[in-house]
Each structure stands twice: as C-alpha cells, then as structure tokens.
Image (cartoon, rainbow, N blue to C red; front, side):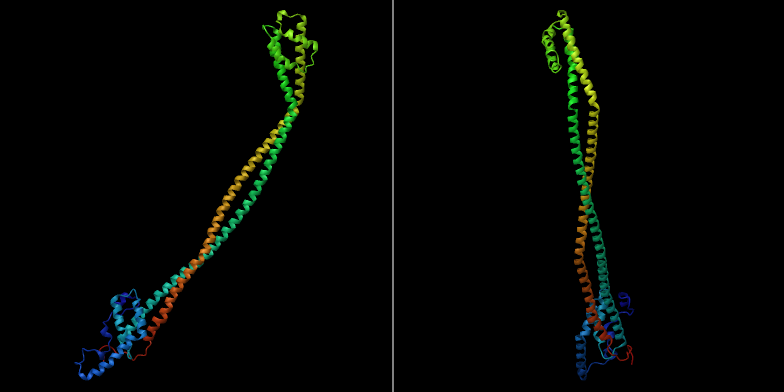
Length: 380
C-alpha cells in the first residue's frame, strides 16, 4: 500500500502487531500467571514514555501532514511509531522507521516546493520592477519630447499670427492708398459717365425737339453744366431754347445747342485723357492690393495650419502625460506587490524551517537512536 501511496517506498503495509518484538507476542506464550504481574507493571511505563516523547509527537505531526498518504497507511505508521522508540529495534521496526523517513522527506519536499514557488513569484515581481521602471523612463522621455514639441509649435503659431497681423495691416494700408490714389480718377470716371449719358440722352432729345415739353431733360442737364465754363449769355438762353420744339427754333437757338454739345464733348474728351493718364498708377495700386490680399491669405492659412498642429501636439502631450502617470503609479504600486510577495515567500520559508527544526529533527532523533542488531520475526 505504501508503495502505491509514496513513490519512494516499496514495502507493503504491515499490521501494527508485526512491529511488537517476538518475545512480547501473546499467541506463543502460556496463560499469564499471578507471578507475571510485576512484568506487566514494568511494561506500562515504557508505553507511556513512548506516547509522551516529544520526538514521537513531532513525527506524528509530520505524518498527519502527508496529504498523499492514505488513511490506512497513516494509521499503520502512527500505530507503529511508538513501538520504534525502544532500546532494541526489530527489523520490521527499522523498516517502519525507513518508511516514516520517506514520508517525512516527502512532506519536507512539499514545503520546499512551496518555498520554490514563492521564490519564483518573487523573482517575477523583481523582474517586473525593471520593466516598470523602463516603461516609466520611456513614458517620461516621450512626455518630455511632446512637451518640447508643444513649446516649438506654440512659438510657430505665435510667429504665424504675427505674420498674419502684419499682412492684414499691409493690406489695409494698400487699400487706403488705392482708395486715395484712385479717388480723382474715379471722380473723373463718374463725371464722364454722367456727361456721356446727358449728351446721348437728354441733350439729344432736346436737339431733336420732338417732345411737347423738354423741361424734364433740361433739368437733368443742369447739374452737368456746372463747371463747364459756359458763357453767361449761353446759360441765360438755354432754358428757353431747350423747351422749344425743333420747328420753332431759329438760327440762334441752333447755335446755342451746338455750342452746348461742343462744350460737353470737349469736357468728355478732357476727362477721358485724364482717366487714361491715371490708369497705369491705378493698375499698380490694384496689383499691390491683390498682392497684399494674397499675402494675407497665405499668412492666414499658415496660422490656421500652425493652430491645428499645436492642437495635435497638445493632444499628444496629454496622452503622454496620462501614460507617464500610469507608469509612475505602477512603479509606486510595485512596492506593495513586492512586499506581499516577500511576505508570502518568508511565510513559506518559515514553515519549512519550523518543519525541519521540529518534525524532521524529531524524526532524526528517533532514527539515530542507538539500536542493537535487528532480530528477524520468528527468530530464536
């Protein structure tokens, strides 16, 4: 049975009575006489001594801890254990001691396995510390790089914003210069357009003289006549001439209208020359405004791109800061994990130490007791 329960043992289970020395067996002895009472009284203290022996208690405790031992074998070994603490050890008692030693060694091996397992866990924890510290170092390195990137992109955005502001000021100044420079030409263009319209529409209608009343057209011409330098007599004659029909006009009336048409045409020609002379400068100013607008558009686009780049850099920095915090917290939490792993290892090591000192030590005391040469069962 023990061979099946423990790989290191090969002896079969033996009834407890087999470990009693041959001379104490009752089946080969005659009925006890009154004269043997003294012998019985002598045997009792020996049994009591065995049961109260601390070494026996230590070995018995070890046998109780053998989880892979069947109850039958455990009872057999516990029953035979006290009988092994004798002055002379029988051959079968020596075998029991050997079997007990194997069981004790097995229990000790279990304790050692537990210690080794906790040591393995502790080494993993210790190894994780280096990994955690490396992760933290990398996270802090990334965070530092991202922070520098944010600083650089902040400076780029500030420069882009300044460039955009400068471009906007340049555009405003250029537009003001264009407005001022083009004011005279624009005025000439407006005057010319009014004179052309008045000549081709209102004056022409008056000259044709087909309408019953041309006073409306005369009133439309009046604002155009200011500044033409017309003779006073001509200006005085115009109201009456303009309202007459063509059939009612005389030579003087025709001369007044021809003079008015000629004066208007001369004014239109003069304005055209002035406008033509102003065009090159106006075109330069227009080109300057277009260039300033293009510069502002480019600066605005650069500012927007710089702003987007800064936003992305800040997002990366925030992510790196989170990763660094997680890594830092993990390093801080390591101390607790390491302490727990160390305590678990120390607890198992203490159990092994106690087992060696008490249980294994108890067995060694029993094992190493001096014994006379063994006598085989049934010998003389």
